[in-house]
Length: 614
Image (cartoon, rainbow, N blue to C red; front, top):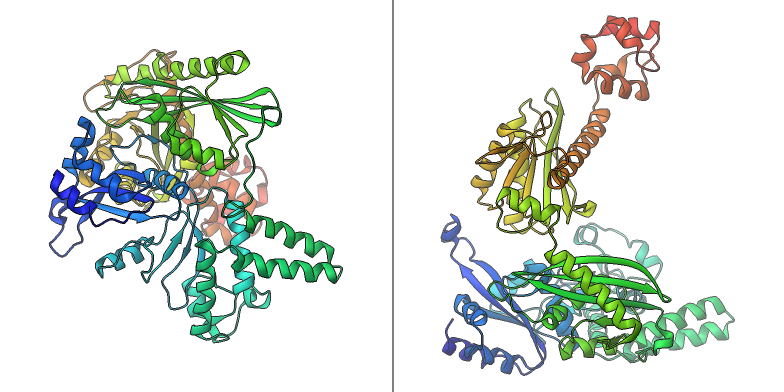
């Protein structure tokens, strides 16, 4: 886009708070598709604004080289309106995590803030989500509609984001109890011939079976919309009346429960905000220090409870390409909302630099005291955090050594390991384990059932191709790895690289063979010293991938119905022991009576029966 195109688009935007996205649009033919396929949109930058029109217009004359390149690359600008500046701040954090835009500072994890969505069905459903219905949004765009956040447009309505999921859940349950809006899936809704349990306990008015007409139901939905648009009394008033009735009837436990619910409702739109805690009340304190180096930054966090340092960790943050001189304050402005997306905020934040005013205002509204220490114990804690950050950014470690040894472009902070396991072609499975900064990230583990065949190369090809296609299609919610490690030798590595090439996923891949611990790359084979720290990193990933694959394979194999099921004296426990010892029924057939008796639970009579039956 050029300056004139940006100004023309900005003139059509509202003067309201919100979030804007610069996007590129690629033809389907760029990806091997046909003219009938939908164009592919890629988000390259996400920003927030108090006034969308003024903020987007400023990009017509970009002040920095990085922003100028971003604007030139973009083909269109999309936007979403929010009710408040705080919502714009949190929605921006959500979208950065979801799309990982090239020109944004971003924390490499997948946490996000909850939103509340009312779907665009004939009888709308209310739900808490972190990813609003993309298909409904696409349908509305195709029909010429605006985005889901635009007011006055039919279709799914999304409210939020919100910082406290527990409070959101409390409010949504109270809304359902008051107005009976359904929360069931489409499948359950369309296949009912009588009301479900939600109707019996007062959570739903059962539009699925005609217990309420559409006009009355939509009136209740509109009351829910009014609440999320700021009309707190829509829910607070009936809750207050119900609480008073419970107290009059001496139902004190129910009255207390309603009181707590009423507190959550009245505080939902900021009416019950806490004052900023004084230093004497700050039981939990987080200290954040930033170190910048090249195209990355490291944020070190120290966590203190009641004056005692109880936790410390480090996080890698991506700095936009060509923007290595990004201020530490800008890094903190991006890090704080993204990191605390799904974590409890502390009473106080001690920071190495001041973040943007919007972040400080948000922290203030959330009751968090944010400051940059000048002297004393707080300054000492901050110095410690900065030392931890610089250690993460600068000191040579095992991952940096691995980068140098392999000639990689960047430190492989995230490594994924792959292995396959089967028993002579049966119960074939694949594992995909993830390591972040040298430590196992078990939330990133995945496994896959493969076609049964006795071909390790074909199995590895299918496993890596599956991972690559999911990543390219946006169906995998994990960050892309910096390095793939294949359990095996040159053959397995070749199969994996073929899969990457066929899928079009550009990720470096190497292999580690078990017998001689040789590291195999496309260009060379390395025999590193057995005490090399960077070799130990690869061994940990390889061994974990192997363990995870074998574990899944054994669980599948133990569940397979075999000819052992009909052998007298062989129960499920003995069957599992036999299959683990001999690998398969074919292995059992080749065993002698003496070998069979070595298995715990197999006596002479059972061994003879096995030999006869098999």
